[in-house]
Amino acid sequence: MRVRGNPRAQVVRIGARLDAGTSAGVRERLHKALDSGEGDLILDLSKLEMIDATGLGVLVGSHRRAISEQRRLVLRGVPPRIMRILAVTRLNRVLHVEAPAAAVA
Image 1 (cartoon, one colour):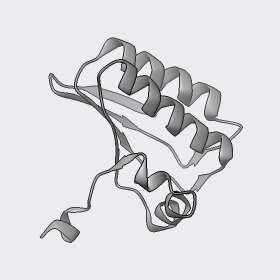
Image 2: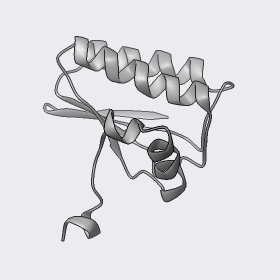
Image 3: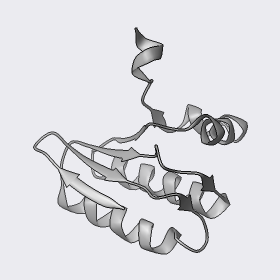
């Protein structure tokens, strides 16, 4: 996971897995990014291959923390497989998912 910052947003790249084994470290990094930055916190999920309930909890918890910090959590590059999980759990209605450029055009 890498964190990049700019004046209006921060981008955090998530690795291939967001599960019980990786959630604690990811949660800590996301909370630090939310506490130290401003503007949108963009999670680049383009490399994400696997997410479980613990990983979904990290996303929801980070979303809530962003709201309390008057920020916005944005999911970018969500792979179709992960998008299906978000749709089945209806988290696509709660979390802000950035539309792919091809879908906008």
